[in-house]
Length: 207
Image (cartoon, rainbow, N blue to C red; front, side):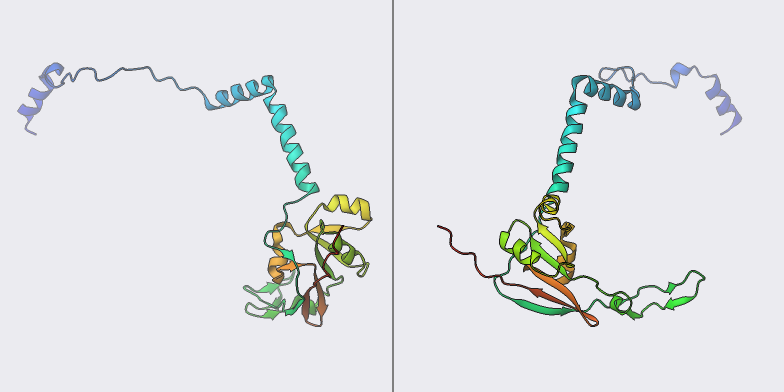
């Protein structure tokens, strides 16, 4: 910009450079309440109204109910016919397995069968704890068997039967083994697992 033009701009009154567009809409001052203050205020209100205590009691009630009676495993039915198959627990390692000193134990890509080093110490019995027939069947099996519920109240049964009961949370074990109906048994057969679905006799007609 030429010096003469720059000088003219600098000397020009500011009013000549600005334009008044007028006021468009209502203008309010910016007032932003501190977020922590809002949270504290809300918690104080909940405490004073008793809402906090109510929510805590409801959470406690639901937690106890979930522990006493977990959600049943979806999709399982009572076995209507016997079925048996073998399950190979062999896995292929995705990465090297090394020892404490960095020594190579198994290289990536190696096929490993856990049963070669760790035996299945107890038979696994899967059952519906709300079905008296399945419960009676399971309790007549080997006393060392692990009783795994897919439905029912494990704590209540432990107290009543003086046996430890487990629960297949989320159906992870039954899905892994391919179990579709119960009662079912899983036991070791050499380097494989033998899985059986047992068809119990039909319930006797009640008068």
